[in-house]
Length: 120
Image (cartoon, rainbow, N blue to C red; front, side):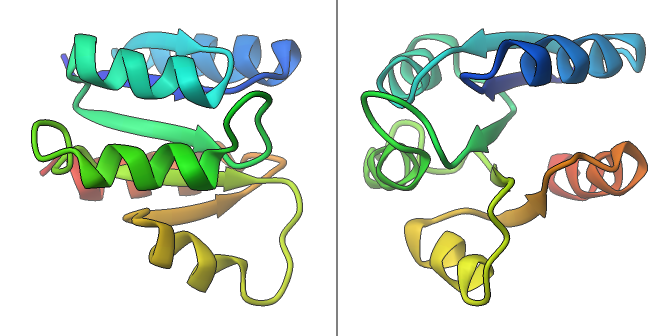
């Protein structure tokens, strides 16, 4: 069973997405801000990270940069999640180190395809 770290500050989004992922057999860990996400990436070594980009304390862009700069966890795939899909956001996510990018509201089938592609 793959372990996914969901870094999301919005309780409704966190609850909805974590329940849907658990129903599909994933082990879901949750962090509520970017700093906690980086700490949990180091301590829990998830198989994949779903990173909200608009987070308190440390935003998802900087949290991803820190994860990708740490050789111990840099190979963990990160999918950026953002509600503010603007032109250039995909490129900004890739520059920060994200392996893929998806928009909110989450279209679960599309997100699951991206998760499965990165877990192989």
